[in-house]
Image (cartoon, rainbow over all chains, first blue to last red; front, side, top):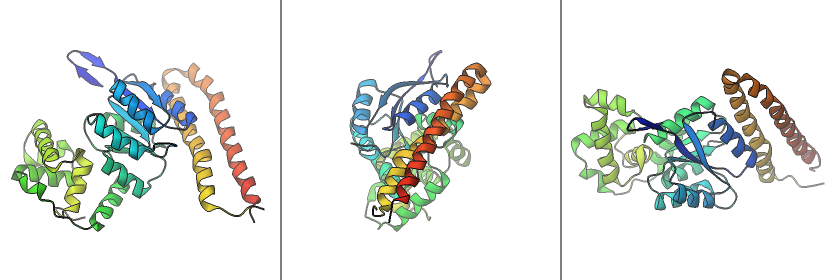
Length: 222
Length: 71
């Protein structure tokens, strides 16, 4: 729920899922929540992208395996045309390689299809608030994968101020904004400001990609 | 007799039974929430959920029948 002035605005979501029965069941579950409005249902990635361009939702819930354009390609295209619309990937399995591609495409989080209603609601709220969301087991896989990739020369982080570097390292350790604020004795708002600059300087989208950057560049140990 | 095709079987399971089970779980989540807020509506949902469970069972039986034909 986003508070605009004194009025409360419902979160506007698009569901992209090619299996009709799953899509409808998801919609019915989400709409039990007074804070959520499903404004569009897309049956493939291409439709999700055009729908998002038209409706400017607060979030797209994107199935990863779809006939036609899949969720990874749709996320990549969506980020080109609507970079501010967060994507929460819906997945049946933790298929490592596909999930890695989804992070690289700009997805902010993953949600297993067997998540409880409370978990789904929590995930949506967190991703809309700018957090990244991966399960601990998936995070481990992501870290392992990127630690194995060869380190490439990329001096982008040399532009970070010492404070921004501290924030990046804390993010790479999976700390929340609240924890970082407490550790560095600064406000959460200041943490967000630092993070914005870190993302911009590293040319990454969100915490998950910043974390992967830190791993890839050997700034933190896995 | 058909040749055993593990990838085909995986796809069949993924697009059929797995999706139906996912839908079933989502419907049960909805049912549970409605029980707290609107018990009458929740009761009405049970028939639909049972139908979904039967459909899932049917899909699973189809996969088993398919496997039994494999050499």
